Amino acid sequence: MSKIDKRDFVTLIHKRINKSVSSKLITAVFDFLIAIIVKDLLTGKEIKIPNFGKFVLKDRKKSYTVKRYDGKLVQSKGKKRLKIFLSKRIKNFLVKNINLDKTFENI
Image 1: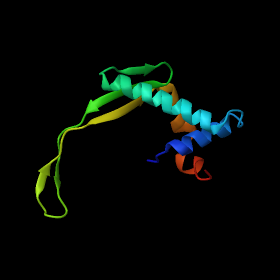
Image 2 (image 1 turned 30 degrees about the horizontal axis):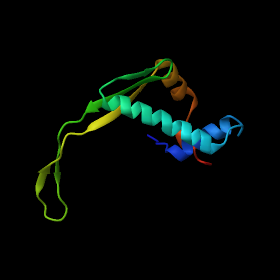
Image 3 (image 1 turned 180 degrees about the horizontal axis):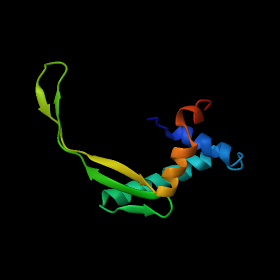
Image 4 (image 1 turned 120 degrees about the vertical axis):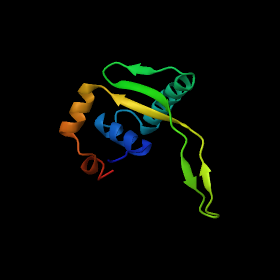
């Protein structure tokens, strides 16, 4: 599975809109949107964006890890994890039309 970071995402949007808006403005809008989503998620809300999907903050189970320096088994705290569920329409489009490894190769 390929991942995309914020810089690649902003660059892709910048190219798709034919550079009619500056990448700094796109970054600012993206940061603002994510800040609003995170703020609402931390209060326990589920965020739904029509024709896009929903954002949910789920609890992760506690897990056990081994410390490298002394070899002791330690239980980590259960943390929250952001899950994004895309709408069927977007999911089907992505599966049929986009190969992420090739799409972001030149960025």
